[in-house]
Image 1: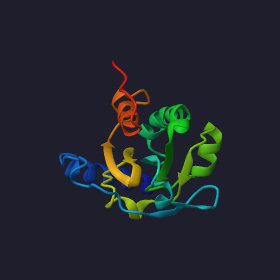
Image 2: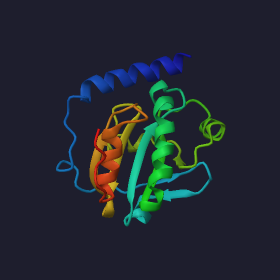
Image 3: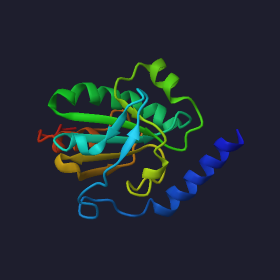
Image 4: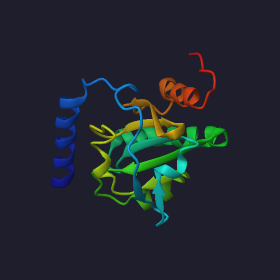
Length: 168
């Protein structure tokens, strides 16, 4: 319980100190490459997905906002994977059991483990944070949302895939 409280306090401090910083594709034209172990005990290498749009969501099992967002991420994953979307959900500040959480909810996207070392490069002030990369791992969007039905998130995915936006 104390570890969770410390994690939450840390996230609040980081969020308030960095939330005002604008995020846009001009600041980070190309995302830093990384490799990370996945739940399936394989390595995910970002460089292998240069021909796809990649959605990265940074999350934790204890995060109530992540619990709210992940069903929407699963829906978007299933809706756009045939269009070339690759989803990876990367755990940060984790003290739970991501494997049982993912299995219990039946999520089918890739899950990366222990992504704390990616937080600085991907400007992750807290959970959940979403990064969308286009072909050649160019930055397209950086969002802080917990809305599983976010039109902004879906339209960012659609535009990264070259699809027309959804009107509200």
